[in-house]
Image (cartoon, rainbow, N blue to C red; front, side, top):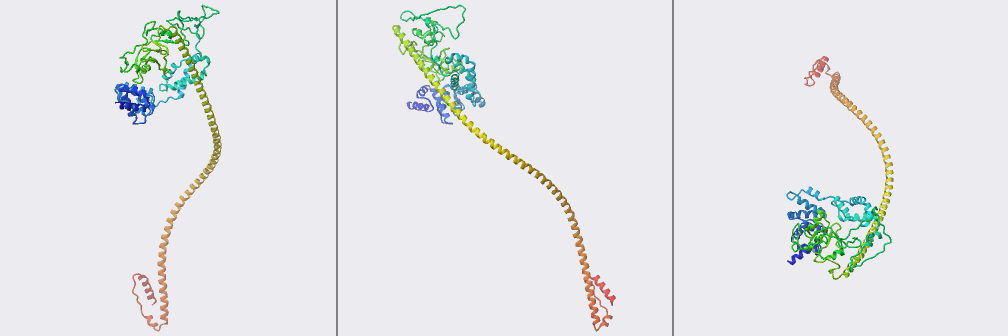
Length: 558
């Protein structure tokens, strides 16, 4: 069992929890189970960083029993850094609770959780500046005694998803810019108006006497500007000045000197007997989850008495603050008071286990008398010195911060000037380049115009050439037809002429034959016989006509 606990503590430390917080978490079985499941689911998507680990722890401690099955779904969104703040995670839990019996609509879920909404520093600066301008006169009057807590809450209401630390830092910076560094008057205590008339109780108390030179009493005078009448303590009837004496307001809204309340032996109110410090009972439990936790894990609201568990368990005390804006809660175990607005402890008095107030860890008794009063005075003086030193430290801190801001602004200004110089050089270069390009553009435009004119001429010539070609094609067709006709006529004529030439050649041959035959006959000795005889030539198929004619002619000659 010890090994398993050590493994759980080591696992919780790996995701960013301290050892003490891991041990406290292990005491709550349900939160430990939820946290281990959330870590297992988140590691499926990404390595867990401390920021993711804190959100997983917040999920495990805040999730209700009705929606424990949604841990895997929410762990995925945390791992993907969609639910990256506590505000978004709380909104996601509220949305799932309000839609418990419905299937989750992813788009509506992301819209309800503000996923994708980014609050820029400029937006925070603008809203803070608006509120500071509205309360500027009050801030200038009260200076660093002005409480910006309500204004910070207004900004949180306007910018729902803004980071609280960023809002607080922006208020500190703008108030510092408005008022400047703290002056000595800001570090001094508020002047006590009735200090001269203060007389402590008789007995062992010390009576302070002062000399008054003059007292004037007016009936119809107006109240002095900047002066407020201080309330009186119901025990000693002296004026209560918070800058001089310790002032304590208890649950019933009655206010006393801390020294007067120290001497009150009971835990109830000296006036109405209201028990302002409830006794931690053995069966004390959270009013929301009824978890059986220790008294150190329970916090009671100082306004309405609501008891809730700490943020290391189910966080119902903080949830009560978010619902009611009751900013003060007291831890039942040791009676420490926590301020949710200032995010710090604000208790000043020490108490024992019985709820009785003590100074410096010692129990006040009736026998101590003047020694106890001296101790109270010394504690108050020490606290004043401590407060002064802390204020001085705070002044130095803000002065250093202001100097850092000034140096950063100077460095940024220098950097911006250098960038401006580079930009001016680039601008000059671009202007020169623009001038040269403009000239080149003009020359190209002229060339383009010349080319356009030439193109128009060429197109006109092309059109003429096309028309000429068309007419030539038509003429060519005509001449080709005529050429074919002439060729046919020539062919026919050639054929005719050739036939005529052959006839003429045959006639010439016949004549030549005739002349030769006649010549031979004339030279022959048988001339007379040949002249009295007849020569018959059989007609040929091709030249029957011609031969017939020749035979007829020959016949005629004979």
